[in-house]
Length: 424
Image (cartoon, rainbow, N blue to C red; front, side, top):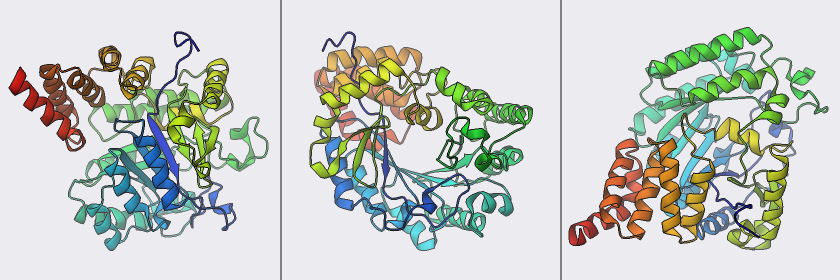
């Protein structure tokens, strides 16, 4: 197929759904209603999937481990260690209820990268009501206390907050509270998605099942979003880009219209593994890990190309892919980190075309000069092309912007530095 009119990208984000089991009864979720005998992902299947990714991805992929409640899986932290050993970054999304003092110690000693804890209100009544579990708020507070005692800044701890009717007036309070919590690195706001509560998909957000969840007062929503934007401008710990906070206004006015008109098409940037062992390319089933077909061969298969053609022709249709991008993988302000140039750069790098990869990293950096990962990409490909001075300078810029990258990029940086000192 002519690559000029058909683009094959590379994964930039991965959801690894280990289980649908959960002991909470969250109002916006169906997992707790699922039968308890549903299949569980196995540790071996998870490792085989990670191995498959590592065979054709040589950059620091974010792998989001989620459920259900992932801390119900006894091999969760060993999986994080395994992900780290392959050069990837693990993110664990949790309700925090199972993080006691012993677990906090284990987390601190593990190679978990980002711990994302749900907190949907600044009073127990709000959070407990949304999560359907009495004592949920109290346990989150305790968990943060334990993490503060043992974490010592090693892990990134993020607060995840859904934007709902019930907690709309508490969102700014969460941000103000987080500012004084040393253990909390950032707050990320998430929009409510259709999780299958309503039988009628047309106008799902207007259905009775979402009546107590969906913000009805649009003026109040806009007011709160503007307040969050002001707090972010003043230096508060809000992870969402300004453009996403603005976009939430349109999304909550009419999510279906937003989906039809969205510019945030994810193309083929997301790869998922679900508890059944099914592999998905941007929300479309691609194959199964149980078939023991290599992940790389699946990603570059004709079946994958059919999915890419469908996405290119239909854009953001009823699949979850583009909304996942909007909610979870939204591009940073002024960036095109998930755009054509960055995707081409990673794709060429994976194929060993370091010259073309470098060209596209430079193009992506023009739009987003403060993206540490793009600088690291520039450095790596410069190293491969034996331009050691550029490699050293680019690595140093990457570490300046994101010090945590030094751990994963140390060997390549030292190789660049040694070569520069030897050969200039």
